[in-house]
Image 1: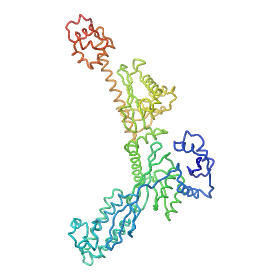
Image 2 (image 1 turned 180 degrees about the vertical axis):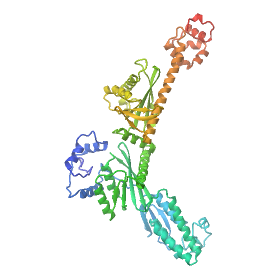
Image 3 (image 1 turned 90 degrees about the horizontal axis):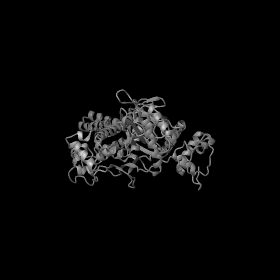
Length: 595
């Protein structure tokens, strides 16, 4: 597909071209933003006929790599490579470097993780007791005392001039084999040399081989991720949050985790995205493992498997595990994807995961990043109030909380209260929706959760109907111990107890909205009680009582005020001020009537 300037902006393949083009240029409602933007810029398109689906797959990957179209998945190898450098001097040294040079040294790599390379080189130098100083041999033989590494047995002490070149080169060769990933072969070689030295009564040499063997085995045991098999495999898993996708990769070599990577993608996470990602990923890599483990199967998996097999030169299998060790590795990879996606958004991985899983549980089309929740609180129908709390990106957004005093009726009617509150809330939305605010009444929520069952849900849907606003509404159902049990929808319930992330998030929302609404109710109920005590004074109505409380905050302060201070309150004249003062400080109740 090309824009008006003839520049290629998208490359794709299809078994039936008509159907594929119709998908793009039909209704735009179901397309993510990236696809809608692409279609807006398409002016013309060309097509190439292929003899097979496999040929089309390979051609698609090749053309994407050549043209780098804006709307295809493009993986950029922007992070620098690292290498293991083995110098070409008589006394070779091993080090980790970020780029090749023209020194004639041998370079092993490239590797994508500089940290892993440095860690591996440090381990090899320690295990095989190679020097890590800046001395040049044989020039610096016997020039100064050996360093601390020699005295703690981490260096063989080449600087003493007592180590034969052949022995030193043998240790370097063993270290190189170790760094190339041939750990088992290195162990077998060392064990053979240890036995030979022992049989020849060379016990000191045998002890040195034994120490190297133990060091390698100890290093393997401290490796945090070791698989049961020694095969090479790459594990892929994705995390999605709306149109933001993070694809994480864990690479295993010889049973050990050798590298991890992550990539941020735009668009809808599906089988097509996974296929495009795999093709681009291995076009940037010179190493294809014998297994590719996925969290969900990609489209055209047989064709992709055939392509990777061709790149590798022997069989490469693609599969989604259903049990065993690889399921655990996929879950670990997915956790890494959620964590990276969360870091990009300035959040925690658990929050991103919970919102995404809530979307899946409720069957929502978008991830509910902005959630509003409502609860009604009253005492036997008196002091009817509602609280609105907001959770943004899985966290309470307290500046967006709102309080409502129910005004349209008196008495107990939770459904009527909920209708009134939501009607008032979305009347405010119509007034402020163009303000561009990121929170408050001008923001439309992605999801509304009510503290209650299907009755409250029906009341809110009835209130929203005149506004023609499409917002998912669900109820939060409690058990007989007032704990979150399920989510109410359409006359039924969705159980969430078996989904820990969703259960925790919904429980937190329900507890927070209950706390907020009941605290407002207690505050209002307390003030109404104070107002009631003031209205017992002859001449003090509800408005004047509220004015007094607003000025003095508490009844105790009103009692302590003198007549002049009371008279300063709006609506309180001298006569009323004297009545208030005498009510709390006088002695003759009969003079002021029955209060």
